[in-house]
Image (cartoon, rainbow, N blue to C red; front, side):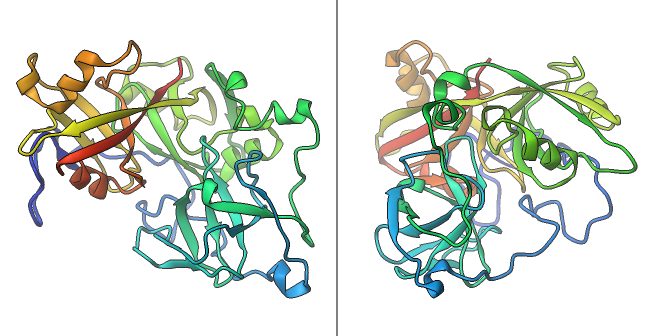
Length: 341
């Protein structure tokens, strides 16, 4: 586990250690694997290049990807020229899509942003959907949102994702559960991926509003809540009832002075996509910029123990880089996520 609290990280060392090294992220029981648990987006079949609709003369830029909830299987194209980004394993600039190329949506998170498969067969980390548009005409395309009734089930409709819901998964004949979870917090396990098994089967038939999604939180398992060991034990049973809380978020804008410390203890693990807030330190403005921010923040928008820092100045899903960004002076924009309960 890597952790930080209030000082800049040093090369090849941990900045601040506030958690024991014995804690690990949890991946639900699965059949034998050929990849490591750090590959949280593993799939049964490796990514393969796909036939671009552009090659069939069907390439037409349609509505922006903010116009509706993206769906797995959609084809999109960059609206700002060449796009580069991290690949699914976190390698910088390993994912590339040229202006004339299309990409296929392979995973959508709770905010509607997505991971993409490019024409070379490389899967990306999560990309901002505001930077892409749907293709207007496709040989094969996921069904568009046709009416207001269907639109109400989209990930963009916060009105319908405002409470905890339950998901029942039954693993029969050796089937795996198919969830990758960050279990570093004792109260809420963060969903990192749905990577097959009964979770994927559930998602394929569930309404969009109650699908298991990247960024959701498991806040109870078979009635067990707030007890990490008990929740993990329940996840090993053949029948699992999950209490799932959607992620809600807000943005904290902070002006960091030179030499000012964050004043929080945060932690991340090898599989993590966010920073877990373990503690907010002190009780004076000299305790750090998080405490100073909290003193003037609106009710409900303070940074608290158990929150997840999901983004720092546009950096997301790369906790180490997010941590380093928090030590820099100047304007900081922290996107904070927590379970909607």
